[in-house]
Every structure is written in C-alpha cells, then in structure tokens.
Length: 242
Length: 262
Ligand SMILES: Nc1ncnc2c1ncn2[C@@H]1O[C@H](COP(=O)(O)OP(=O)(O)OP(=O)(O)O)[C@@H](O)[C@H]1O
Ligand SMILES: [Mg+2]
Image (cartoon, rainbow over all chains, first blue to last red; front, top):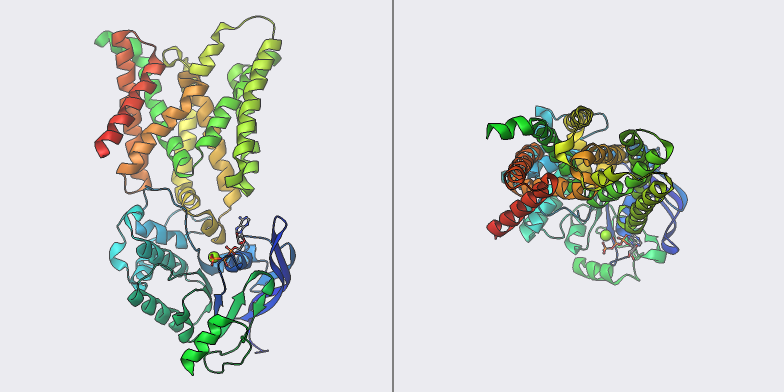
C-alpha cells in the first residue's frame, strides 16, 4: 500500500473525556479510496474516533491529519453523518432544507439551482426522493436517518464518515445503502453494528473498544487472517463465510 | 376610536417595530435554544442600569454596553459546552441583577423611574427609543437575510455545520449579540422582566404552523402585532397598564393556541 495517498493519519493519539481515557495511543493510516468499517461495543469510542478525525474533538495527545492537513482546515471535504441529531420538536425545516445544509460553506449565503439539484439527487440515491418537501419533524426514524445520509452525500465529498448510517433503516433500505457504499469510489469510514455490512466490498475493519485500541485486518472477507481470534463478533462472521 | 389612534400613534409605531424585533430575534432565540441566555442578559442588564446611574452616563447607553459585554461573556462560556453551562449562566444572571441593585443603592438620590426598566411602558417611549428599535430591526433584517442558512444549520446540527467549515463560534456570538441588542432595545417598552415572554410566545406558535424559517418569522411578526395591538387597545379601553396587558394577551393567545391544537 506504500504508494497510495494517505487520507487519514493518526500518530500516538490519545483522547480523554475529563480524566476518563476513551482512546489510547492509536496509530493508524487510512488510504484514499479505502472502505473501512468500524465496529465495537456501545461506549467503545467509535463516535469519539470519528469526531477526532473531523476535528470536532481535539486529541489529548498525539496528532491527526486529514489529507495531510489539520482536520479543522479540511473537514469540509468530508461528508459526515452523525449518529443522531437532537432536534427541536417542530423546527420549520423541510427535508430538502436539511440536505441543502450539505451544500453550505463558509462565506456562502444562498443556495443555487445546482445545489438544489444535487440535494434532490442525493435524496433519490438513498431512496427518499419523494420526501423532499416534508417537514423534518414528521419523518419516521429511518426516513430521518436516510435524510442525514443524503445530506452527507450532497456535500460531494472526497471521503464519507458515517456513524451508524443504517441503524434505524429497514432491511431493503440497508441493502440499498450497502450497495451504494460499495459502489462509491471515495474513502469511506462507516461505523456499524450490522454484520451484513461486512459482506460487501469492505477493505478493512477497525475494532474499537477503549483501551483495547484498534485491531486491523486486511481483506477479511477474502482472507480471514486470524487477527481477530479474540473477537467473538468476527468469529461468528468467519463461521458464516466458511 | 380616532382618539385611540391619535393618542396611541407613537405606541402603535413602537408596536410595529417591536413586533418585527420579536419575530426575528425571538425566532433565532427559539430555534437556537438561546432562551436561557437571553433571559440572563435581560436580567443581568440591570447591572448596566445601575452602573450608568452611578457613573452618570445615559442609562440606555450604559445598559447597552453592559448587555453587550454580558453577551460576549456568555458567548464565550457557552461556546465550548452549551449543555453544561446552565449554572454559570444562572450565576451571571444573578450577579448582574445584584450589581444593579448595589450600584443604585450607592447612587445618591432616589429614582422613581427605575421600575420602568424592570417592567417597561410602551406608552412612554420617546423618539430616541423608537429610533433605537428601528436600528436594531435593521440589523436583525440584515443578519437574517445574510446568515439565515448559517443560523439554521447551527440550530439543527452544530457539529455538521462545523464540519462544513462554518465559523460556528462567530455565528454563535453574533446570535447572542443580536439577542442582547434586541433585549436592550425593547427594555423601555416591555422591561427586563417581561421581554423574554414576548420574545418567546409569537415565534413558538409560528414555529408550529410554518414549513420554513422565513414563513415562521413572517407569521411570528403578524402574531406579535396582533398581541401588542390587541393589548394596547384593551389597555386603553379598560384603562389597564399597557405592557402587562400586552403580555397577558400574548399568554392568552398562547393558551388558546395550545388548547386548539389538542
Ligand atoms: N461529552 C461526553 N462527556 C463525557 N463522556 C462522554 C461524552 N461523550 C461520550 N462519552 C463517553 O465516551 C465513551 C465513548 O463514547 P462513544 O460515543 O464514542 O461510543 P460509541 O462507540 O460510539 O458507542 P455506541 O455504539 O453506543 O454509539 C462512552 O463511555 C461515553 O459515555
Ligand atoms: Mg456511537
């Protein structure tokens, strides 16, 4: 992999919430175009890891670079989908308005027709094109999640960072989204608790659980390498394959 | 009836200007969940009233500067951890009011008009007050036209806005500064204590009936005008204190709306 461009690099990264260590001494390189799935138990630090990559949190120790720069300077190149949004109950926003937020930039004050076209196209891509004019507060959980995914895609990013994009999505929707993720060429970092996501074209899997840090495996679905012997979840997965 | 209009002409202009202010500032406050911060600024500004008296400054000037200072302080405190700053906000609120009481006590002489800053009187506005309201209205309109997508993006999902490269800290600070100006501009009309209620009710109702932000602002302005107009008229007709009647009218409107929605 030596000659490939680096998308994300972590060197000796440690992160503490107050005094509680969440991630410790992580070294990791992610290359452009890779499809990475992040797994691990609740509270393991997956969302924290993503926020560090995006510059939403600063590492307590160590250094993170995104496309060779400090994350805060280039995070606009990333399509981010948070795990959840604590929205007011009745915000006067349509689904389209939410997706258009993906087109917002520093110093940009109005949206163009092109922005709207991209936003509608993103909604189509995740299967909710028909919801564009609905008020966001009237959506179901899965519909809202697809909207947030569309918003991430509408940024036309160089990389997507998705925090459990299918947690509330129905089976057919999940399949559709996995297929979509598989077909994208850009760097993809996706947190998931759904084992099915591992079946489609994933390059590497990160297992994040606090101090257990990050385990890596390459082409797991092709060559189960034994790196993950201690991880039950993946044992199960391998059983499925064999 | 025509006597009502001649007598109340300045108050009606004030009501108009105030309604616009309520609609924009109130909507920003409600969507971004800035109510507590705005309330802290409103009450804390009493320190500015006291300080102005003590130093012999024009009261509105002193209060404005003091409120802007509080706004900057609050913006700084709440930027990093918006959720965990309740206690600090509450403290600033109380310290501001206490300073006001202290400074006024230290100032020789007794000022009977101070109650006016607590409860306001929309019937006693002077042309300077109206001008102040108009200027703040213009600032609010400009901010709304320029930054409305940014305000909304922050209100809906601050993390995402930051990832997009929006200068979240600046928008946050701008919002709080605008709220501070709005509060001070409406003090003479509605008073420190009542202003938050009037900023909250029309946008709250409007939010529930609107599909987009501009619609919400527009509807909030109409509602604010309805409440202030009705309040003024009732106060004239039944010889009641105007500002209190306006607030109570808004409260009744709010109750009717809530019941009607069930
Ligand atoms: N703002 C915060 N302050 C203090 N602790 C926090 C904060 N946010 C998260 N934590 C803690 O950090 C740990 C890691 O949280 P994180 O959200 O990264 O977990 P996760 O792996 O994404 O879990 P899940 O699968 O439930 O989404 C958890 O124990 C959580 O309680
Ligand atoms: Mg998480």
